[in-house]
Image (cartoon, rainbow, N blue to C red):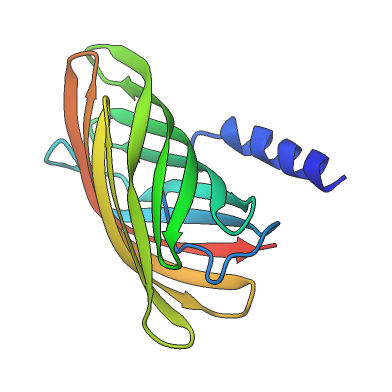
Length: 194
């Protein structure tokens, strides 16, 4: 039953375009499932300001002591109407308690006044977290792919054992079928661990 519920939630959220890495699961255990949702503010798209809006999120399921599977979405809409919608399905391997390597597939869609472009590709990188206190943790990631290269850095605060809040800065260079752009900015969000 748990697998059917998980698959249903993943399928529903994969179809939602306005749902990036956020505060990772602290002390992950097999079967943990976490949802993060982010709100972007003070963002830029191609050097121009971008609308403040719900800008991304992720779903993480812990398979065992070393492996996680994760769906990530980042969405940016510039004030000029340009849209960049990034989707990733990734597998993460913990090489140390606070350091993971990840790899997977990507689907990137851009919508501008000139054209619509989309591409499937790959993504790989490294992500880490650092406990800064009993409830506070820092996190960062660095990713590379054929369509997007990105980094982010942030801090999360555990409100309860299940709820956390986070703030982060993200920057990404996007190159889809000869469409080059950059998105960057601040995001705040909430996460819930089931």
